[in-house]
Amino acid sequence: MREFSVTAAVAPQAPRSPDADPNTAAPETRHSHPVLAFLGRRVAAAILTLVVASFLIFAATEALPGNPATAVLGKGASPQEVRQLDAKLGLDHPFVVRYLDWLGDAVTGNFGNSAAAIAQGETTGASVLGLIKDPLLNSAVLAAMTALLMIPFSLGLGVLAGVRAGRKTDHAVSVIALIFSSMPEFVLGAVLIFVFFSKLRLLPPVALVQPGQSPLANLRQLVLPVLTLLLVTGAWGIRQMRAGVVEVMDRHYVTMARLNGYRERRVIAHYVVRNALAGSVQITAQNLQYLMGGIIVVEEVYSYPGIGKFLVSAVAAHDFREVEAVAVVLAAVYLLINIIADLVVVFLVPKLRTQLA
Image (tube, rainbow, N blue to C red):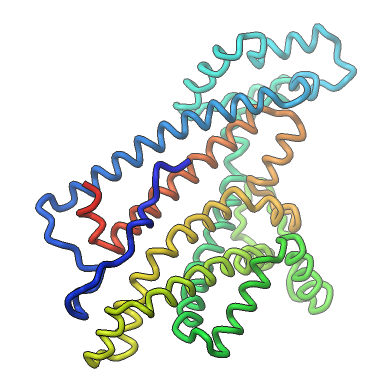
């Protein structure tokens, strides 16, 4: 779903002095114009990608086995009742007409009404956008809390392991990161529940949020879900950051800085971390995407009412309007995170600005 990634261009060139590291860009005659042009291309590509994704999502939901009207009304529904609900849902129109009507409404934020609500004759509370608002907010809160901890956690331990490559600290951090990155979420979640609830009686085993209530109303119940996500996503970030630091540590401009008497702390912060960080941005972006759309297992383990759990219920109920809305919103979030990640890389390595024109 991406046009291209700018991280492939972050390999630094040989500087003439320790201060002329790869983060120093050549004078730009057009200032921010290359960045704006790049942003415009990425946004245009994202819009086109989102349209294509919406068509594929719509087609995929249409291909789901079973009739939504029959699934909502039950097997005892008469053919006439099924036809009436099909008409209310617009299922009696050709595929292309249904898609264009749905796309036109989706552009304005109207994803239609829940099939179950329509079948029950409800006129209020049937909006799909209104139904997904709370689960989406719950997942956003969980993802934001995890991200605030995951970014400094993974980058800090990754730098620590990288600058001490081959030592005991590096081996310990790398082994622990490998263990957590290869451990399925439901296994890790079960282990944490066993330790912190069954044995220590410190934390609740579920994260129940009442409708209309903020997940932040009871922070204790979020500790285990956040810890599970932090250990899994942070482990990947640690390994990526360590690899980047080890690679940059061997570059000749780092050696030149040391030979010129720069303190090791300045060498690490100014020359090593800044260049290694660019290669870790995409991994961090992928972790953020996972936090927004791929936390279904964690939400199921802790009974957390997030967007992943909502999507599973919608698929099981054949409520195609809910499935389409969730999938399109998540696709838009994925694309937005990709664009932000590429811009972060551009600003981390200003030399890239002159290569974007």
